[in-house]
Image: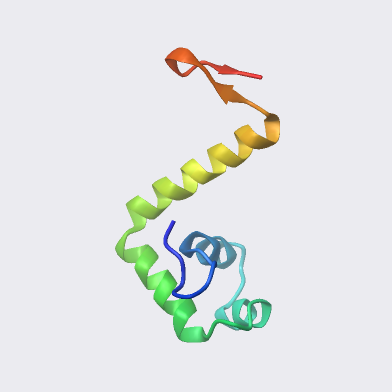
Length: 81
């Protein structure tokens, strides 16, 4: 997942925060080591690469869910605990 330069803040996080109704002002307040232009650049990058970023976000959610549920993938993509 692409990140804002010299940070660990991903484009996906910025997108998710925007979807949750957070403004750029709120994001900068929550993460004072970034500035507004970086938030807008991350959103711009997302819209320019929307399909690719959405795929990465979906994959990250699936991995998170599997780790949380302690689910593993076996042969033939079979899920098991």
